[in-house]
Amino acid sequence: MAFKVVKPGLSTTIQDLGRPGYFHLGIPEGGAMDRFAMRVANMLVGNDEAEAGLEAVFMGPELTFEDDTLVAVTGGEMPIMVDGEPRESWSSFVVKAGQTLSFGFLKSGARIYIAFGGGIDTPSALGSRSTYPIGALGGVEGRAIAADDVIPVGKSKGMTERTLDKALLAPVDTPVSLRVLPGLYWHRLTPASQAQFFADEWTVAPEADRMGYRFRGGAPMEFVEREQPFGAGSDPSNIVDGCYSYGSIQVPGGQEPIVLHRDAVSGGGYFTLGAVISADMDLIGQLQPNTKVRFVEVTMEQALAARTARRERLDKIRAALG
Image 1 (cartoon, rainbow, N blue to C red):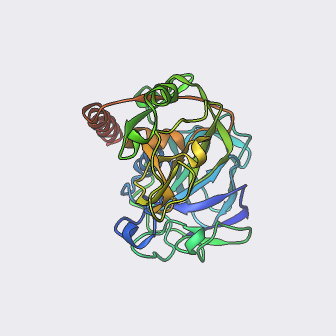
Image 2 (image 1 turned 45 degrees about the vertical axis):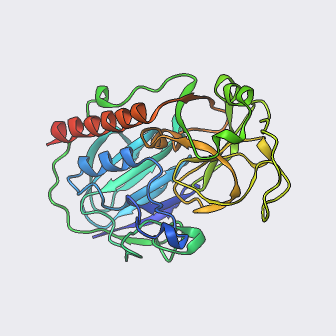
Image 3 (image 1 turned 30 degrees about the vertical axis):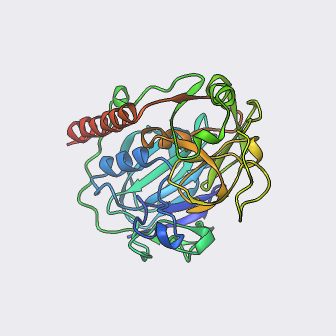
C-alpha cells in the first residue's frame, strides 16, 4: 500500500512521537510538534499512537492513493477534500484507490496531522521515522516530502471510521497562556524584570519553526550585576555553557525569548530563565505568527497536575474511540 505526493504543501514532513535517548549526543527527540494531535489521528485510524504520519505546516499536501486507505486529519483547522468532496477533521474516513486527498486554506492553528491506517512505513533511523532535516535523519532520505514521492503505508488493522467528540479537546485561551516553571538561571534576572516578564503581553514572531518559537513585544530584560565568568561572553545573557531541556526559554541579549521545541539543540551559551511546561508544548506548535501570548508562572506541583490532566484527557479519548 502507498500514496503518491502530487503537491507537497509548504513544509510537510513524516513524523511520529520522536527518537528519545540520543539528546546527550546532540540529537533532539524530534517528532510531532503537536503530539496530542498526532496521537489522536492515529487513534482515529486504529493505529498504535506512535505510528508515523504527516505533519503539514500552514498548507496541506495533495495526495493520490494506490489502495483504499483509512485516513484521519487532526490539529489545525483546514478544509479537507476527497476528490473535491468535503470531509470532517478529527474524524477518520476512507479514501478509495485512485482518489485524491487535498486541502483548502488554513483557518486556525498552524499544523495539521494526517494519519493513515497501518502508518507510514518508511525506513526508521535511530528507532524513529521522524524527519530531522538538519541531521538528515528519518523521513524521505532525511528531508520533507516532495512531488512524485511514493510513500509506503503499512497494513491497516481495519477500515472502521471514527469521529471524535470535539468537546473532549482542551479549550484555548485568548490571549494564549503558556505556563512556565522558572529554572536554573532565573536568579540572573532582577526581581523587577522577573515580574515584568510575566506581566507583559508577547507576540509570536515570524521566526517560529521546529527548532524554536521566538516572541517579541515585551520589555528588555535586566540582569543582576555579576563578574563575567571565565569562558562566557561579555553579554549578561551569556553563560559558560549549559544543557537545554525541551521547552527551555533562552533569551539572547535579554531581548526576545525563544522557546526551544522539538528539533532544538541540546545546549549552548545563553542563559535560560525556565521552561514552558510539557502540557503546553503541543499548543505552541499550533501558534501562528502574530498570535498574542502571556507567560504564566507555575510551581512544580501545578506543572505535574497539568501533565496529569493532559494524560487523563487522552485516556478519555482512548476510551471514547474504543
